[in-house]
Image: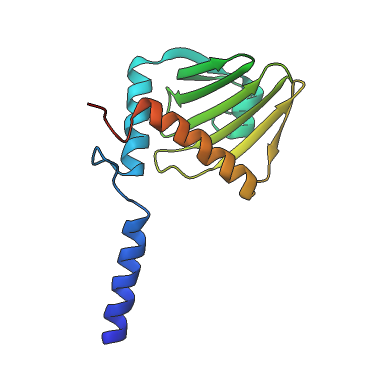
Length: 156
């Protein structure tokens, strides 16, 4: 009985540690969902191209995906946070290097897990196998956007 209680305590502690609250009291999942709601309400209307939408699995029959978007440009680098208008649980982060003619799209949801990666180079796209490198790059992009849309700390 003591072992079962100790195991359950360790399990609950481990699970809650992964959902640590930020300074505003919002956990990671809540921040992602809130960011999606904010972008849906106040983002620019945009489209994810048909071939990319199909590779991401968010549209069929070569149809574009209408999104609400927030983006930032820094020279030839463009980064974006897209929320599907048809299904707000489809969130697509992207990074575009216009100088190299390369784009990377990361499909996630309000839960924050990386669901799929699509890379486009020279106009030709392909689904990328998710590895540790892709997960790290995705986590960097997700944090970049959460810090801008739903900051974890407020300044006084």
